Length: 285
Image (cartoon, rainbow, N blue to C red; front, top):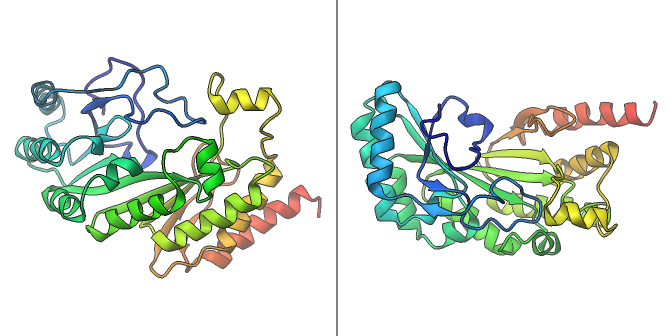
């Protein structure tokens, strides 16, 4: 449910399909990742409280029974804690059946908030933050201009979890290309083990014309993985994940060749078995 269709395209995680999408910002505060085309042509801006409250009131007229709200666009946590608390308070007073507020969180903006600030936001109603880890390899993170290194990414993920907010982490298969596939998989597993997110989703790299990474492919500087190589990378990633707490795992994004789902570590052997069956098919066994 989207109450505002203006000013560029609107994106949200698959799990927020039935949520009210409230655009408290337009675009992404970072908007420099080499692989991403989501907000590349959208100028970033933060909406005023008056604009946001007006949108909430319009939404209440159309969707009075709203239970979930996703704060868009690319990174709502760029707003001050006071602004976010004011918005969540308005949502709670407007939608009596509201049970959950969620948003994307960029690692740098997460790190600008203290654990106490995030805890206050969780107590107010922010229940889940979606973090694009993308890779745990410092070389890959630099190449795609993520804006943080692997240990800063770990610190951001751990800070969200320490506050009691659920963390839905996303990583991108193939982001290291042919050259860095092994280190991308191994170091991403290392970072994930240190964070132990609530939910983990894998996506497969999609190249979009006009992005820096797409241009690197055209110049022969970046060699994308084949379908089989992507599955082998996923196997290496899963094989090296060892969580201390249960984590819901999903590899069912539209970009993925093989849909997988389960709970790690409990279903790890089953997931690897399903993956190996498909890899064997590629090998013609």
